[in-house]
Length: 196
Image (cartoon, rainbow, N blue to C red):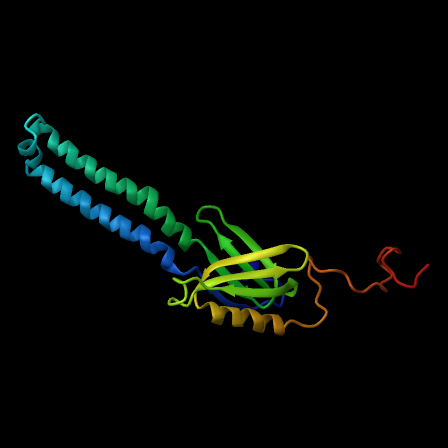
């Protein structure tokens, strides 16, 4: 993390989204594994050939293997990608920026300078309130909006962001801010006030 910090910048906190997004994939995975193991053991006892006499008894081990492979495929292609995506997402707050890092194999980082934040809104849905998580929407100067989904301890995190914004030195100019010093002789003459 130290390599990505700007000069004089300090790390305030790092968090990842609330884990509630993993509840249904994990429950589905457990139910599927339980159903596959039940079906495989039922097939290996020879129950299918007793139920339907036209099914060859030699095919039951292959059907049991197919049940196991279906359960493994569900874990690999449904549950595991969601767990990896959750684990690969980070919200990083520093004394100057708020960064959203996503990705497992390839990382994508979106950063918002705190000096460009004009307004911050917190929204909590019905399921987020008992977990104290929520969505933070940042209204930014010149660049639109930034959204942080399922932030854990959302009110505390919002307080950290607000405190970091309040501690910014006055007159700080970041790349997405407007230039407000028009008396600098290095600027083009069109931007200087009172000059010829």
